[in-house]
Length: 292
Length: 234
Image (cartoon, rainbow over all chains, first blue to last red; front, top):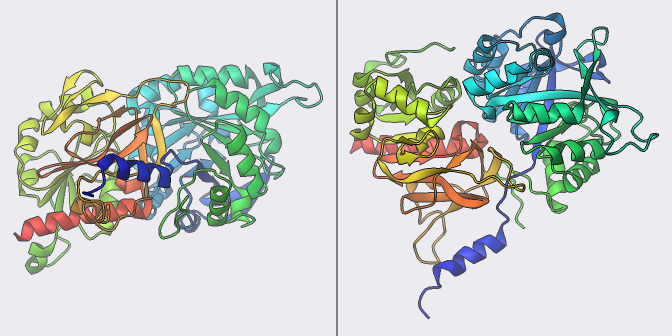
């Protein structure tokens, strides 16, 4: 027998490993006055730690991406200071996104030039939806993320799954005193955001934020199946099973969480090992690898 | 944006200069040079972001990053008369993401002719309900190997893959892809197989972002620097 046919080796490779896009695990770091903080249901913020320390910690422990939200910026109508972005870019080698108060092309350019891979806009996109289009044209859709703060109104009681009126978009959620309910509904807004050229949506399910009772599977599935851009679920992660349920029951491509990671309730490498054993495709960094 | 240096910084004594790898990063229009230059600096490489022909030809290696669209990038290179300069470089050159795509003959993005040092045509991912475009996130490298079956897949492939494993993920962000051809070193699958790492003579290309691909990406950049220094010492 001469050497095996090339296609046989090819086939063996394909059977041995699943080649596909990995589900992303994304720690979210809320930044206020140069430190990482975390609140419950967008209120009562407590200091978690220094930005660079946490960025390095998460990048080393296997996070696939990081999101930094300057939570005071948007409601105070000021842009984020850029030095910490530069410092993050110098210190980590995974992609990261910066959000908070980016309301012009110039501010976005400044953030990107300081080393951020993506910019996320939320309240300014609601004020001026054309900003999404302008940013996408100037920098490419891949780096324009739109965050949507969505509040579910009586979804369970009204049996309202599929009834779009139960999901309302909120604005200026960085400061509870300034938070307003917009006239928009989440599914409509998600679709508009996609049509305007956004490259990704971060769906913050406000009811779930910080309470660790699980992701809003119904809402995540509804939004993720409506649009053809990646949707990142946010709000509600409490245990590793929550991530499993989310990835198995929805089309979302990533899960964002904060408190469970900051308080080390869940360690990212343990979470990924668990997800891999449950058949969810995740990425392993460094020497830790999972073979199917 | 961060400081744009038009000369190499003299951070080391003159006598050690010959051992230092100097990479010219071509200022190809996009905004984000910082992450790639810091990634290289962490590897002990001196780099400078430039459009100057002299600096590019004097460098030990060249990096062509790229964010934006192919039409704009080519227009930018033509404006600075860099297309012929790039075509004629003898040092190792690495194109990243869009920087790889414009090394090909042609791109469907804006229907423009590329630099043309790698044969082939860059295409757009076909829209389908199952496929979210852009292809964004971490995905596997699959090594293309024509050698015998018993050799380790990676050792038989190009130097650029030295020390990598079959299950390594790298970070992709793109809507266009280069189909697999003879120049492909490693590929990836997203609906179709497409080129992830390409090599044609001294021209290397990576569709993903090695500077954002964690330790795997750092290793790949290190391999490229290694290729540059062995080329330099010859």
